[in-house]
Image (cartoon, rainbow, N blue to C red; front, top):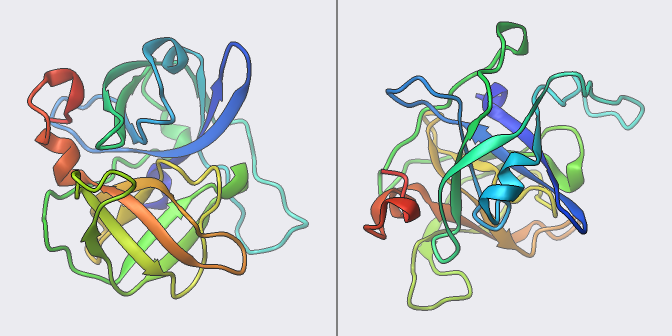
Length: 212
């Protein structure tokens, strides 16, 4: 499932930023990327985003640098929302076979089974994995929208800036949400919030604000 995760480099008109996302399975066999709504703020930014696949190393070692040759430039923004913080975009082309792309499965289960793992590019670094035994339903910043999975503490690993939009997987390897934000950083592996996949699916009925 790690092959589904990619690094996003959003090339803005005034400044640039980084995030994470994932290829997700779909019946149309389209190269859909699932990420945070605050990553792809509008259609124009989606066209100027570069997606890096296989940016990873075989072991945890600062001496190694990941390859940056597996890239795809540009995408079309299909839907997004900022309250239920998600975005769905379609890459300008299908990742070629040599990229070893994997289209991650997903579930709308409202009571997922752990342990859970987050796979991301913290601080635009090579791919990292975090583990937690449990999550709970909560809200993030907007009390009226209780559509997030709350990670009280990571058992192993952390997230950082740049992890936003990265997928959270259940015990079956299915995506249950993507990272909106939180306080996790280096020696403080606490308090992260993931937008729930089932909420992004159809919390809002407008086609432009839902995955469905």
